[in-house]
Image 1 (cartoon, rainbow, N blue to C red):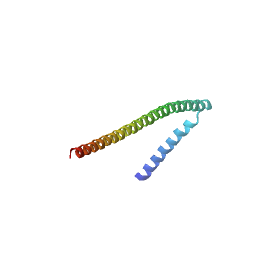
Image 2 (tube, one colour; image 1 turned 180 degrees about the vertical axis):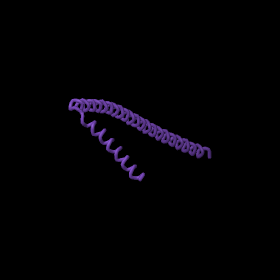
Image 3 (tube, rainbow, N blue to C red; image 1 turned 60 degrees about the vertical axis):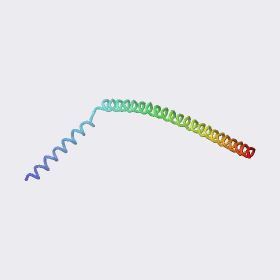
Length: 108
């Protein structure tokens, strides 16, 4: 008997919920139009806020790409400088080695 009581009570709750939701939809046309206008204005505001956020993110992305480009150029420049230094160092060592050979040959 409790189960039939519970099911009839839950049915009443469902009907009450349906009726209250259903009665909200039965507003005057002016109220419905006003609510729709409010919703549209709120959504337009949300859209504008999202557009601003998107523009900020795009700007940050562009700055990040620019920064990485500058770092890449700096790295390439450093690599070229190191290559030049290594070549100069090798040439200096070769020159010193050949001069020392010549000097040792002369002293013999």
